[in-house]
Amino acid sequence: MLKYLTLIANLTNLSTNLFQLSWITTTLASCNPQALQYITAVVPYVPFPDFYDEIPGWKALDALFSETHNARWPKLRRFKLNLAAEGGTDVDKCRDESGYETARIRSSLPDLARTGNLSVEIVDDSYYPKFQ
Amino acid sequence: MTVNVVEDLVVSRPSTDNDSLYERRAPDLYEDLTVSIRSSTDNSSLYERRAAVDVYGSLLASTQFAFASTEPIIWNLPLPQDIMYLIIDTYFLHNFPDPDLNTLYNLARTARCLTSYCRSVIYRKITLTGYTRHDETMVEIFARILSGTPEIAHYIHDLRIIDAGSMFQFSVPLPEVEQSLKYIITQEFPNLRRVEVNIPVSWTLLPASLTHAFEVLFQARTIKEVAILRGRIPPVFLQEFRTADSVDIRALVSYPDGPMPHSDNTCQPTTLTIVDNTPDGETTKNLLHHNSPLRIHRLTGFRFHGLGTILDLINPTIKARQDFLTSLTIHAASVKGE
Image 1 (cartoon, rainbow over the protein chains, first blue to last red):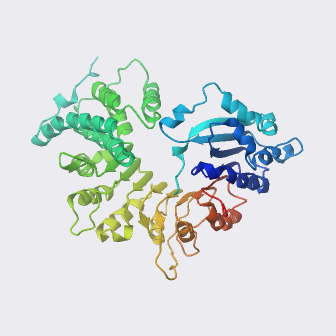
Image 2 (spheres, rainbow over the protein chains, first blue to last red):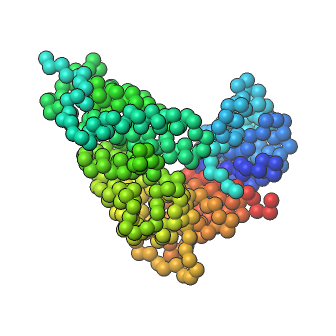
Image 3 (tube, helix red, strand yellow):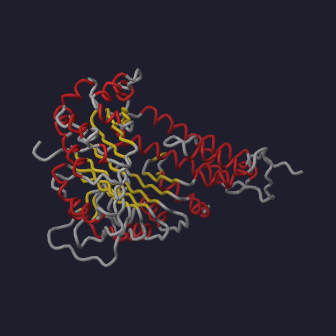
């Protein structure tokens, strides 16, 4: 039974990627969550946290963890939301030292945050393979 | 009580013409490499140069450790062995990707009772590249070291072969660098667990003797992890990975038109990574073809990175293993219709 699930969105062509997050929500909704303990979702980093609210699939993602659906994830211990920023020095530039951006993004996922399992972090996208 | 902790092994070893060459060249080499690393802006070249430092470490280590005194070694450090080994592991092995090898070399040279353990750390991961200094590639240098001190083969757990495009000439007889590579990879490494090959060539174009040498390497019973990160390989090549539990394929896996023959020898990993850069999923199709040597009946971990348009190709694998997969990663680089 699946314990670790990682779903990575398209991290290139940022202008069009924001509309490709719905497949993550769809996949999460369709998988068997009974044994899932760790979920990692990797999405592009956008320096305007308010923008995430506008992404189709974002609210649906949160809704999967609402109180009515919470029993779906009996063993969930951590939901990591990794915001992948361009590698190298760009990552340092957009490090959220004040914590404002990650806190703002957490607040855009209230049901998920309420579970106590959500962590949000800005990461280096060079870890992930690149595609043309 | 015998005090023999501090000993300059370079002084104590017998000298030969070749040795003096090593001793003169090694510090220059290191200095040049450090400058190159700092000034380089080209990523692939940088990677190769950084890797070259590993081989430099081998050079320095073997030339300075190999002829150590034969007097008995007495442990006379103020901490017990297990604590010292733990400190070395923590400080050097876990400080990836920039372990402080220079300090490790100095430690090995000054504390004789730590020399053996330091060697095992220094040689644990060896990276071979085609990077050239003083008209000699790192592969050739390491082949010479291995030939002179074959016992270092016992320490190697992780062997990486990286080429930025200059190592292979596709000619017969084999050029010097390819002969050196062939020599290295056909040696016996009793503790080798991982092999990573990052060469931008089509394996079917390599001279037969070199292909055979790679087969010898991959067939070592101790190998548990194989990563092929670039180039083009035929599906049948996977049958060489028969002992590997973890297989990572980022190269193009291609097969000419026509039916793929059935393979009796199989590769049966428990963890499989596929990075498919093709628009039509050619690599995925060939790897997961029913006649491919790859078998999924032991699979518990699956990582897939590819265009969203080819996600359908992995659905049968996920469904077939849905009760057994414990770890799944899907990286959809774009989504169908968008």
